[in-house]
Length: 489
Image (cartoon, rainbow, N blue to C red):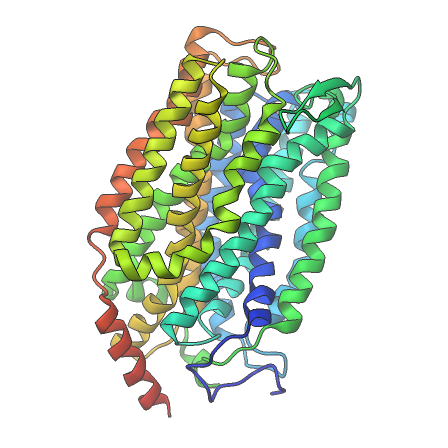
């Protein structure tokens, strides 16, 4: 082992650079799968001419494969030896570059050659998405395991979560706010358009038109270069301190997944919370471009507001995350989630009111701010619970299967991501959504409304109920971690 692996100080205090370096991994992964979750279905339907139902089926097929694949990857990660570069860090280096290359190929403008909506275009979309998803597991799962290896200190984990989510949300800013703006800037047939950003006018093309395919690929390709550099920084500058015994990997087997899930109630509850939370997140992310385009775009002329309203919506996730540790201490673990899920629902209701009164832009800005504040806080801070669930599993079984637990959490996350694309896709198909059309029928608009507003709000209420069942108190976690430290010493 070299200086990158420190097993002695398991309650280490993390420096700002420790936290930022690790958080750049979240930043990079959000550039990859934030764009996939937010725009791939939109790209497949409007640029590649694939129906919403077929696009949703692609998501469904790949996620079923992940159900088997991710636990196997978790086992591979747990069985990996502790090398001079660490146990988990080498995966970021070895699979990071293939990941960003494959991700960029998702937006390769193949429809220009293979034809819009053809079998060949659909096959390409399926294979490229599957390859990206499978390689992503070899980055995301060890990256999550690395989180639990930095320190056992709960205060430091809270600070780390705040920093990593701030950087994750900088990634979200690049994805949900600036990505469509950059694609419009690079799209053909541009015309001078008011962006809503303090009177700023830019030459913007129609990013929903098939002719914009090349612009999508160029912009996303640049994003992937940034993502590759960020993953390298995360690899180079993080330090692993809390690790299992070097021989522990020999005892890990695939079936540990089922044993761990069966005996670890906290894992069951948190897994369900991840599933519901990320389903509601990706519902909104998937439908947001449809919501803007068909409520305020062709007829209202306000689709360019995606940039300005997205900028306002990004403020909480970047600048207010510093409040999380104090709010968590004040409100308690569960109270934190209850509060921000409630804020999310209020934001949803304001966005609905805006869709019925498009001239009242203040409703859109306020609603998006509250929606994103609630969403980024609830779904961001839940990652702070993973290390304590890992420790709980180690406490009750004697096995520290970090990779397997992160595979389970990642699987729930990915199923949520998939459901957030699958269900809206099928709902749009059922409500007669027309791919590439400038306007949609009243029935299709209803499908967009339910996917964007009402179903996520219902899921937020369900998430509150799920987290109410979470069994690990702060006192128990503190006692458990110190006993584990003594045992490992």
